[in-house]
Image (tube, rainbow, N blue to C red; front, side, top):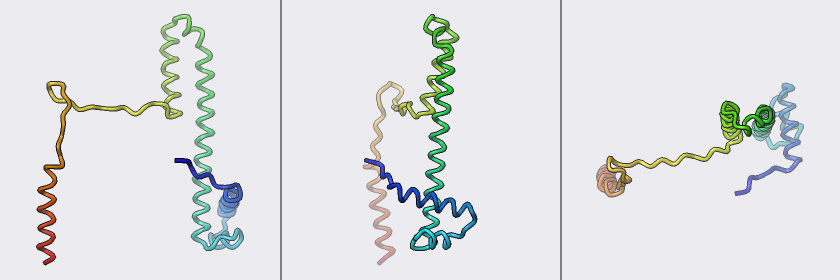
Length: 144
């Protein structure tokens, strides 16, 4: 699903609303100045602006940390390629940090098995149906 990207006029208006709120204006005043329908709309715009600012700041910090990891890795890359085990270990750890930083790690899949190693199959629905029927019957009798 495509992420909705607001047009520049909306972003600019949110930025202005955030600036006015930072300057101490009340939401009603911000609404009046920027043409929002009411104080609630102005408040929502300020909070959207705050959320976008935080996301942008996090992206900037991620980029800086990524550059730092790149510099550290390049400083010992040649040693690692020559077989220096400490350098290889350091490179692998740096790569792990980079994967976490940028969300590159794949989710783990776990399978529960029995003592014999076979998958455990839990059939819940047949167990739930009688208790659900009892609950419905009790509710019907209470209503009647």
